[in-house]
Image (tube, rainbow, N blue to C red; front, top):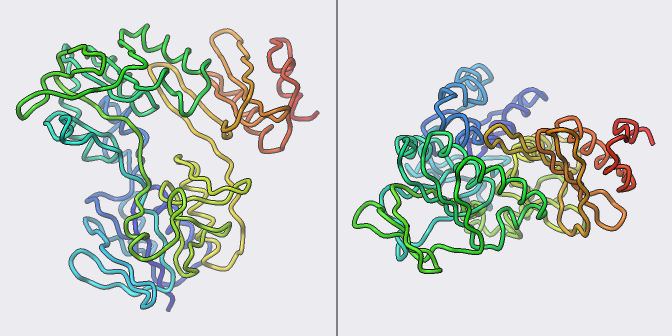
Length: 402
């Protein structure tokens, strides 16, 4: 009987094993995860869960009983330590060895942390990646406390929003000249800077952290312009790196994560990869997309192809972020854009990215209708004229039929 072993019990891992069963795979399935809880949603960790608005059980992607009911062996609190591609085996930390016919790596990513030399190992210095991280930091988010958020990407901004809603005095520092510089146009940065400032967050751009100070617990921070500020806790949101250690040690090709072909196979045809840890071919490059949508879609294609579908994975990127009462939805990839056009209707706003005459991405703020239209236009390869986008009288839905 064929055995599929999946390493990494997150969104991609859970999606892969579920798809295997729903598409008729009747062999053995083992899902290996290092955490003590069933696979769960990660996006709410820095939003609803941290605010106390979502119970742990509501995070679970599927009830724990789902795995037993579908004859999926769920190995929790267990980490894989080595892969032997020639023997087709995985060694677990308890020295147990699992044999596989197909191995799927859905190991996700790890948050970048601060070096201990600048205070990264002090107590009350947090990262946001898993349930244990969120549980550890939740008590610190108390009214009247002073927080330093390091990094003005989506994780940092979401943490700042939660802290501000809890009555925390928040300072956010971003070393680049503007927040969201790596992922969004200046117009989107401007929108979220104004949003956070309106909620009392001090947003400092073009200023980095020199060091955190304190004996065992952080008590302050020195910025690289010499400013010193008191700090009760700090949240580090300076990006993530794909978890490729196992893959590298097994000799798999690494290129912006674990490199896969259009089918989801790595450089070893019996080993597959999906989700945040993996890159897939798109427009001649190996592209790694950090999103829930990609984790699900990529993992499900891998499952189908293990069974024999031979279906190529074509990424259709989409993302979202919740901050205060604003829902940001993003469709497409804006890399290489050379113009951005804004559409404003009441409180709804969207920014449309063009590369030459081609529409490549949309940022929509509290504008779900235009997000969906933009997403469908991009997927269909349609690019309306920019003056149609900016004209408030344009029937946007009609653009889909043009």
